[in-house]
Length: 304
Image (cartoon, rainbow, N blue to C red; front, side, top):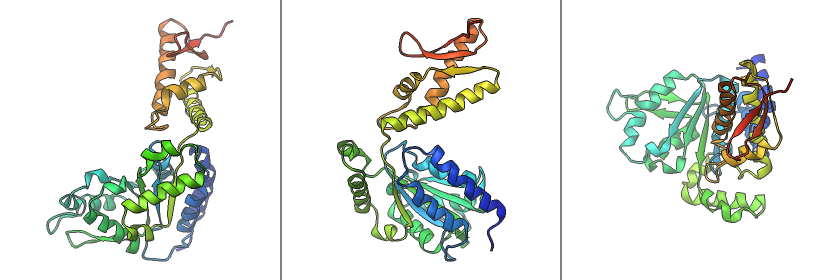
């Protein structure tokens, strides 16, 4: 099957969008894109998934976000099957996944019927029961899974992305080490925790680094720009003092959650400032500044 012009266009757009949206992870994006190119250009051998990844590193560094982004760009907004593997920690949970009685298709069967092609995302893969991991091995090796109903699901039109936070707790002690040392440590810890046959079937092991302060500022600026664009569409013309970026990082970045809370923090803080401005009888436009209290934002109305 030939690659269509539309598929080529989507891939080209993704190569621009991915580094723009996923900040501070330049060491993994080229390798991620390499697998996606081969998958989209039909350069994979038949009978296997389009590509597979194991994404390691701390929470809030872009592991899941990068998967959501490339899936949405290449296949559309509803092309993701997402499984939280912490819900499949017992042998009995295997029945929930693929059915436990003849005739049952399980959750995986229902989701596969909904999605023709896209990405299967397995979050926190290390928490899955060994019997559930057997299913993962089948997926990576042959691109197929057999349900309790006897039906065989074909996952060759899918990417398989697995995430894990293995080794992330020790990263604080390695924060002054080089990138190569950090990656060796996290990869080694993952190899100790996961079955070697799983590693042997993965196309790319991608280690996402902790976000340094400069990257945190970039992410805060990205979300701030998006919020100002949204409010402009609502009729509120706002500019922002550059100093508020450090304030947004302080409020939106969490040592354990990374940049994950940043979007909500920006929307809340900016939204609260505009709401307060409107309640005071002003137009909700002006310059965003850090309040004197240092704990909120205010809108300084434009002076005529």
